[in-house]
Image (cartoon, rainbow, N blue to C red):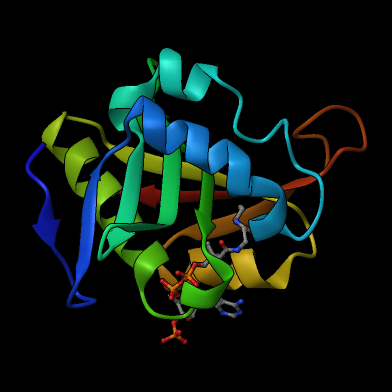
Length: 155
Ligand SMILES: CC(C)(COP(=O)(O)OP(=O)(O)OC[C@H]1O[C@@H](n2cnc3c(N)ncnc32)[C@H](O)[C@@H]1OP(=O)(O)O)[C@@H](O)C(=O)NCCC(=O)NCCS
């Protein structure tokens, strides 16, 4: 993938490297405002890394998206985790990462993109709606009584 500038002048979106992944693991608790070590499971880099992206602003990692291309029907791009540096939120970095992930998924022949959010987390919910996703609450998505917001966007 060729890195390119996007809507934020200096922003570069490119594929994740091992050095990026190590940095993501190191900043995760700070960016999430609490312990979150399980979120960036290593399989999202080691097994599915070609669908993972980072956003860089003048060489600084300011956002990441860990995703994968599923073998489900219809073929789906699944976004496992997106995180933006707290000082760089509401500047379109998340939007640009989602846009690039969707472009790549479309080019790979996928038909839709899916993402999950915790119920009641207004910021992520509004973010997904703003990216054109339809969201429904599934009360048993993650096990009995373990509700999640499920977001789908057709490509
Ligand atoms: C949710 C998150 C990824 C959004 O990233 P971002 O780069 O700040 O989002 P963008 O600037 O691209 O926002 C695009 C639009 O989404 C909506 N949006 C984004 N964050 C929002 C928030 N906190 N509250 C309400 N709307 C929001 C807005 O419509 C926004 O457009 P606007 O700024 O012109 O109003 C980021 O806040 C984050 O990393 N949060 C912590 C980690 C997290 O919760 N990840 C999601 C797990 S599902």
